[in-house]
Length: 486
Ligand SMILES: Nc1ncnc2c1ncn2[C@@H]1O[C@H](COP(=O)(O)OP(=O)(O)OP(=O)(O)O)[C@@H](O)[C@H]1O
Ligand SMILES: [Mg+2]
Picture 1 (tube, rainbow, N blue to C red):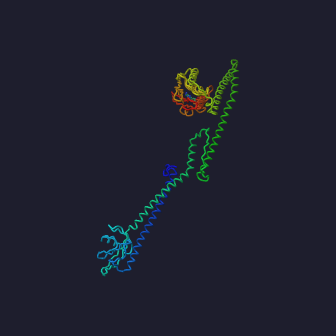
Picture 2: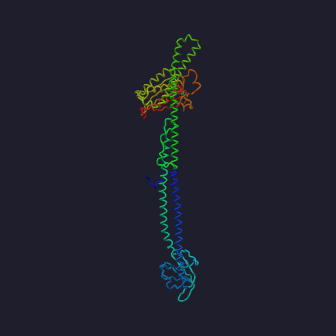
Picture 3: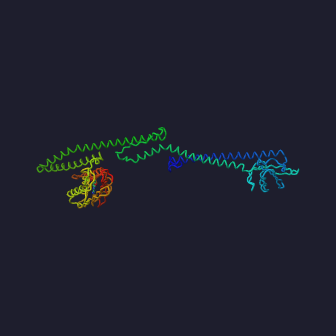
């Protein structure tokens, strides 16, 4: 267990509850202590007043006070002083305190009949009761004011002790309230803490990815199902069940859709091959055919070719989607330098109007790869640099080995890619000019870069693009190890 006095983190409900409860206990304890002290004070003062009144009653029996005699022992700590109208004072001989005449006059200022507290200057504070009468001096009766005084310390001393005890009790109660509340709050919030931790872990999951499974649930075994935390916890787990079911349903529907695309593409391949075959066959007697038939056959041939490419691309994408980690099982060490050399050489042959520059390391750069797939990446990037830029454009292909990875750049000084197109460039069917893309003879499908992205992802790499007029740079980073670590 941690430090029982350490406060919970700032701004939490636990901290609020702890401090408010402790403050409430402190206020209540303080008020009770103050009330107890006030009551004790009154009781003590009343006792002193009662003693003064009793002493006065006892003295009244003697009518005239004989200050030379002993009116009573001073063991009751009551000072008895008589002050004559001439200003002479007599005191009961048995009492040790000897007030000066000034002090006696201060004491005598208390009106008769009501006990009051008086500061008798140097002598200290006294509770005083006065009465007017006569004193007998040498048989002669002289009018005088009788003063009965009890030191006020008889009220204050026990109050001081009681104050210390009450103070200790108040502090003790506040301390116990703090530690006790902290324990209770901590115990009550444990379930909520567990819920928060689970929610935190769930919120870190990539829920946008349909492959994600939400298998985590809040542990409710320690919470009463009828408690607030128990009810929130079970609602929370129910919500997670629903999310997980929703994701599973989405996964299943995506799987079915991918399967459909794969099946459809596969099924389309054979009839397409037949159409292309028959179109080729008809071309044997090409010269004897009327012009309109010639034209139609040429279109059938080119469109079926375009459709075959599209179907092949769709099939490849469907396969990469269905098993994104397929590459992990079938990867083989591949020399990327050789692939780059071959691809650039093919591009040079296909696009003699472009300028093709190449920079590769002298030694082979071996990366784990699925046969043919990295070649496809190069073919698509170089094909774009050729088909989407005007004649005379310079295309630089470079390969650089960095610690743990290899970086391939295909850079051209063509017109660049429109900024609004760049964020979705690697999505399927993204093309700069949709209208132009559909003109007869244009083989562009808008799948090339999507295939590049899917292949690079299957190889645990990253692909990115920066483009502005005069400079378009596609960069592919691939790890040198098959598990993707660098
Ligand atoms: N180097 C480039 N320069 C200018 N625009 C480019 C370049 N590379 C790609 N693009 C733009 O990006 C779009 C998408 O390219 P992508 O390769 O995905 O499809 P595509 O080339 O149109 O068709 P295909 O499926 O036949 O490759 C292209 O239509 C083109 O507008
Ligand atoms: Mg392309």
